[in-house]
Image (cartoon, rainbow, N blue to C red; front, side):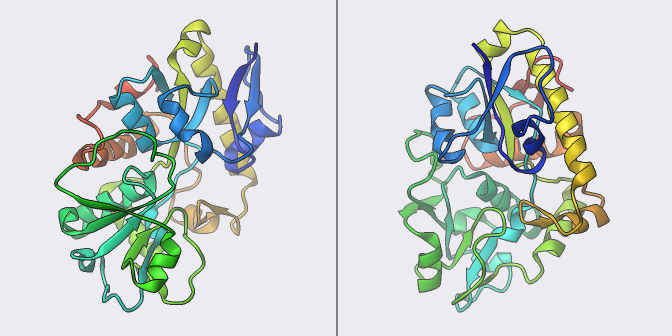
Length: 307
C-alpha cells in the first residue's frame, strides 16, 4: 500500500503534485482532499486520513500537547506575515494596533494559526495587552470539534460570518488569513502599509512566520526508516524548482514575490535550523495564549536528526 502525502497544486508543492519531483526510495502517492485542506485538519487529532499531512503550526502544537502520535517534518510549504490580513471597520476608531484594546476582534478560531501569529506580533512590537481585547471566534472553523484550552485570562465568544460582521460594525476588526477579502464597504486596513509593518516585525524579531508544516503519523515513519528525510529531500527539490520559476509579479500567501526578493525573504528554505527563530516564536505565542500547556523545545516537534 502506498504512503499517502498531502501536496497541493500551489507554490513549491505543485512540483510534487504534478509529478515533477518524486520521493526517492518509497512508494508515495500524492493526495489532496477535494474539499480542501481545512476539511481534514480536525482529523489530525483522531484518525489522520493520510500518512503525511499539511497542517497549520498551531494545530500541530495543540495535537502534540494532547499526546497525539504525530511527528513533524521541518518542511514549511507556506510562509507569510499576518499583517496583510488585518482589517478594521473604518468608523471603529482604530488608528493603530494599540486601539484594538477594548474592541471586538474576530479570528477564524481561537487556535487559528494566522491569528496566533498576529496576536503575538502586535504584543511583541506594539505592546498590545491581548487580555483587554474581546475575541470572537468564527464558526464553523477547522478546530471547532477539538477540545482545546480557552485560557480564562482572555475574553472569548462565538461569532459567525466575519466579513459581514466587520462591515456591520458587530466586529471592530478581523485578522483574516492571507490578505483577506478585497477591501470594500466599511472595511479598511489595520496597517496603513501592511508590508512595511511586516518588515518592522521582521527587523525587530528576525522572524519570518511559518504558516503550515508537514506532520506524519509516527507509526508510518517507524515502519519506513528513512522516509522522513526522503520527504524532506523531495520537498527541498520542489522548493528549488519553485524558487527558480517564481516571477516577481507572482504572490506567495498574499505577499508579492518581487517584494520578498527585494527584502531578502525569498527564496525561503525548509529545515529546522533555517526556521528555528520562527518555530521558537510560534511555540512561545501558543503557550502565552494558553493553547498548549508548556513551551516545547523545537527539537521535540520533529523526527530525530532533523536539521
